[in-house]
Image 1 (tube, rainbow, N blue to C red):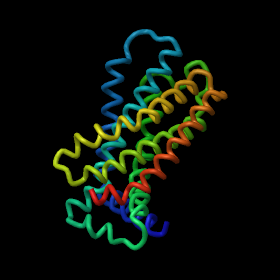
Image 2: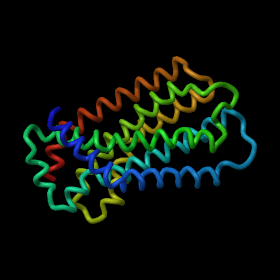
Image 3: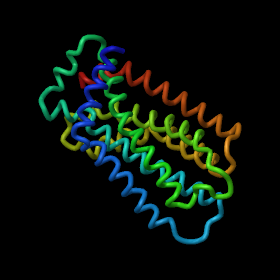
Length: 228
């Protein structure tokens, strides 16, 4: 864990100084929301349709933003020729993955804090019929973003040395992230429609299990990904 924290702090310091990853991810997510808002925002909709549309747009933007952020997770070392030195950190190679995951997760959570309220307001789902359960939505966003970051960071390590990594990373990661996308959209839609319920708790439990399983599996497989 000490190795993971050191790598995460290093990545967060770099992200804080340059802000290129944070700004590009936030701009891309906002652009996706704007395009979807212009395409889907017209016409009269029932509260149920409004909630489903807003949830789908928000999580589409966050999924694409996760892919953009994960592309830079290992690209910094690859561009500087320091990727091999990264693997020489003391401790198991799985700690490198956990450190990179935490480094991706920090900026992505900041982007999520902007995208979620922006998407709900843009699609008219904020306060449509009842008070928005922001606490439950924050928990859903945290679990969903963790799942996205876990999957895209792992595949970022596989594609970092490939010439077409910008295209291959989403193509490889998104099929694995389908369960997280479905659970996140379903939970968000239900929270916007009816608030907290047993069905929401079930979806969040599934999402938490997906996150935990993905992190464990990616940590165990990460050394083989580095060798590839």
